[in-house]
Image (cartoon, rainbow, N blue to C red; front, side):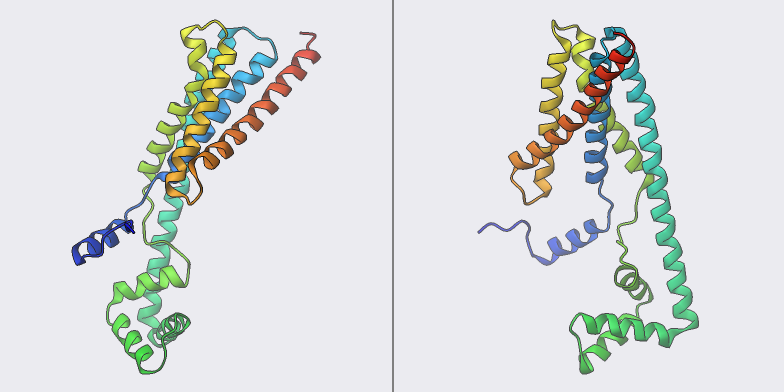
Length: 241
């Protein structure tokens, strides 16, 4: 059976170093889904209200830029807060180790005991880790606070979110931009395929089959679009359209 990665010393070292670098899969998936959902919701709502194509384009482009920037800045702030919290906790642990070393050793001892170490092996492990201050702090961050050692990169997260939002969000607008015969029907098909593709790509990092992940994401988009279209029809009726 072919394994997912190698186990030679150099390969292990490289993989462990890579694990501490931040990934942006969640930012890309979140941005893409939200971009496609919100833009198609606008298209469906305007279409349901019976408004002209120019309104679709104006509102759609405004949503792409304004909501895309809003999401990117929101994600930037969230990741910045995570990074600052990680730095704060690192300082807290460093101060506790300096001022209350025996108490911190007891925390370390209980953490390692919960992992199955005991007796002289446990005491040797406590002594070995306590002798390396940064390794000690890292262990407390992960096991005491449940933090990841992969420090968030706010600028990268914001950039990925914005790019994914605009890329996927442009799909529902393209039929109206290029002027196909029935742009709304084309937008439904194109956006449905985009949702399915986003879900299918997401399955690369999941145990679920690609078709199930794609169908789930497409269903999420269909629900949002149906609600928006229904609201548009209702508003058109209230306005006498």
